[in-house]
Image (cartoon, rainbow, N blue to C red; front, side):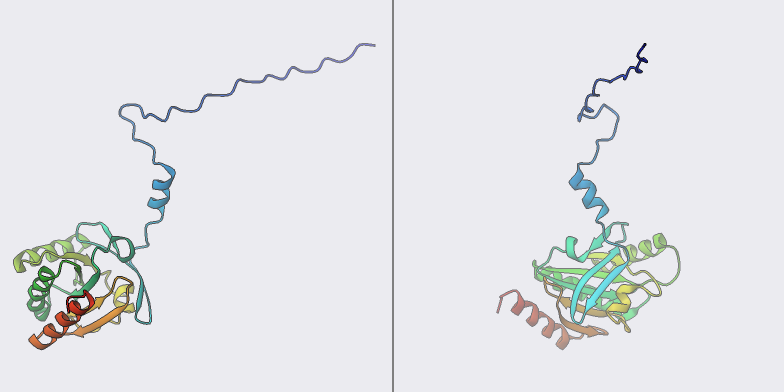
Length: 198
């Protein structure tokens, strides 16, 4: 009796792992940690405020880059300046805010501009041009128009509105309207106290 022939099984040699050195002209592959960090970018626009504690805030700046309160904040204290180029009291307040930032290196000022009409690029150009005229150099973010979660969460009803936050996102101080001498003095005293200068 003849035994039927079994088909031969072909076993291929294992393929070598790809060379981690990129070839000239090819983009380097992202290490896993960098790829994870890139995918962990915050949703823009986003803002979550629990009581007086800011959990998240992310908007695009006038250069099109994402600014996120949790990862991009540099100051021990952050002063948010909600304003618009169309608002005369805002334009009068911005140079004072610039002056305050210049006095305290541990204070970071961030403008959040709410512009009316035009594309995002048009709005960014208007904000940058006005800042140049006013000699304002602090970072400018663009509000995301009607229904912006940042405007809603902070309950912004008047311009300018200024808010001082500590490094944990706790709101320490809030002011609506033009910054007068007494209010500015109160703000600076609070900044000095929080920075251990008094």
